[in-house]
Image (cartoon, rainbow, N blue to C red; front, side, top):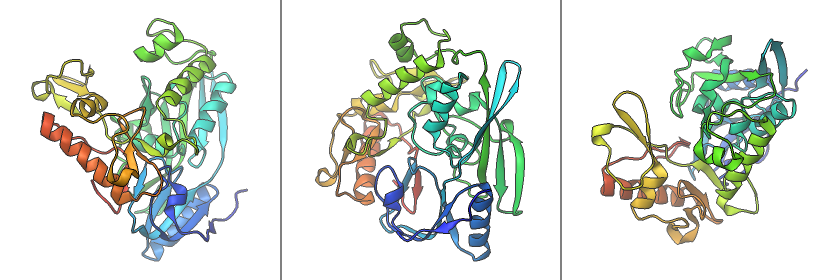
Length: 349
């Protein structure tokens, strides 16, 4: 049986974001399971308070003024399996640390999630963002979710993935506070092999041809190594990891509107469209790794220009100023407007 939700004494949201930025919430409540999430959100709704769901804080940019409502911390734990032939369905509580889930499924010999190793945050956020990396995204594996519908104050179980509008780094749940993810289910491989290795950099690292399936543990270790090299695995001592991950999404444009930039990575993105590398656009617009923002308190990562990092002593205003500088520089140079990937709370780029 899970414990009741508890109110925390420290109101600063900076303690709950990977950027280590953000002002106070009016109230912070820690919810230890799905029932507690429903109770905390329902109570806040009944009182007419605004609600902010906080998992690992890896996709949040919170204003220096904070949040004038109740922040609900997702802290519930739970992972179980149901086998059906060569497929294993993993049911995961929204509050589970995502990389812990990936590590557990790999250790148990199940394939599918290994390319999503090292991504910070809680499991409940993965379908909201349609999290993806190294040629795999949540949409490839998601079976269904349990949701709390705040409009009807009811729990909807087993909502199919097909109803969530999963697309590149988004879903119908993103930017919509009406439904809250309580549990998530993934279809995994029970044959001890990974998902096909589709990402060229990962295939080279593993020394295999594209589409090869390998041991999940080997793929996980390779992914973690690649992410560490880009400062994308959390480390409190490494300011390159004080970030919200990739700050801008790769823009998708009609082929006719895409700028012609020598060496710029691009991928097919549906009929008549192409997805461009946001990192490539940023670099070609003149922004180098380590490019500093106001007072050097924020900067592009020294390893990866797509990450905006907090170097210590900074503010959310500093970070947003750097984001605007990069966005406007790319727009001026190429006519392409980059859009932020993190959730912006009481602030905007």
